[in-house]
Length: 334
Length: 156
Image (cartoon, rainbow over all chains, first blue to last red; front, side):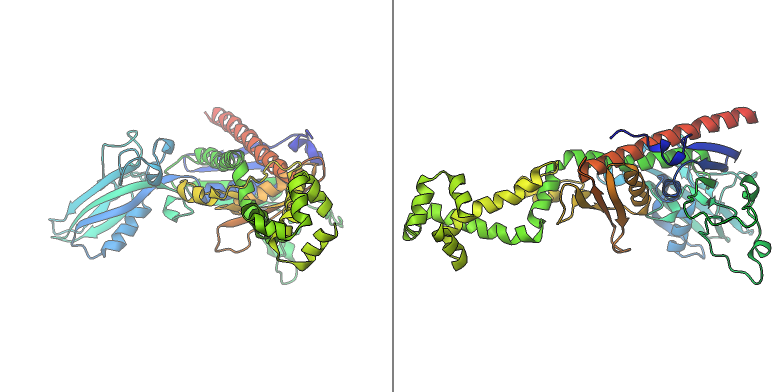
């Protein structure tokens, strides 16, 4: 019964990670001695299920710009907001409050009016972040450019005005890509295509026509005339995670794994708690033979109890029912 | 004895039915009961409960399952969990077969089939799989963090 998951298949080392590059927007690493399915789960979860905060509701009081309200609302949604320590923020749907509160939302306001002859540019830095929030960095627009302006929201000409209130909420990219913590995740394995997971198109020779991956030199190229190993499975995965700026790239990985565990824990919890519920659920929909039998039995079971006259009509049966132990008569019947 | 047979043959008559049927009800339940941790208690309020409770039940056993061969239906899960879970359950030497499917791309459902040897049950294998995957996550998470710290230390 007991076995070590990682000691099987000759994997003597267990999962290992090798980081090859990291800065505040990227992390490149090699994950090895895990299965393709796990590596892919990790990729999927960091791309689609790591929670971040983004503007979700926009209330437009004044918009005399040339841009339509919904156009601006969309642009606002895409502005990356600082999502570090997102755990301190609730999902609005889970929050105790009625609509929104400081525990589940961050409010940002924008008020800009152009009064000069020159075109005025409204940037993310012009968003004013409300004070009612779990900590003093969550929900801040991410500003990484040297001028410290952040994303451009709109341009205004003389006399045009924007007066907007935004409500930023916690969410995941599965719902809308604006909540994605990553702008791209590189995922690669088997640079020499030894496993033939790819069928490369070519004019005359695939090897010369297709550029080699930079990871090609990390792995042994196939030997001349080497036979295809149909038992081989991929075990080294090259990740290149690029952050949008709202969470540090290494934290994205951590959060991704945490999210995966949260998923599992939820299921384990549900399974433990709902053991009986599962059975119940199964009951009414159990195999075909039983489905038919149940109502039929019930009727037979209840009628004789209620109507003694009915039972007496059957004479022998009724007597047997009355005198013989219940189980016994049953077995005899069968 | 003949009376009973006759009654069964004659069909819908109530009095005798009653005599014959209870054991038939018992038998299938019995056979399901052995070794099945998710056994059924007759409570139909389950459905009602589900409506009340905030989070509907995420996993259920599909009809036609026995203790060592069961199909589970997961709601709101996809390839992210399905494939990794399938792999880790398959690693369990007590498991004969495990596979997952997403029956339709526009339904948020994931089906998982587990068939085990007599040494364990499908439900136990599922629980073990979930636990193992969580442990694997721990290992990878820890490994990543130590490597990150080493890398950062080397950089500065």
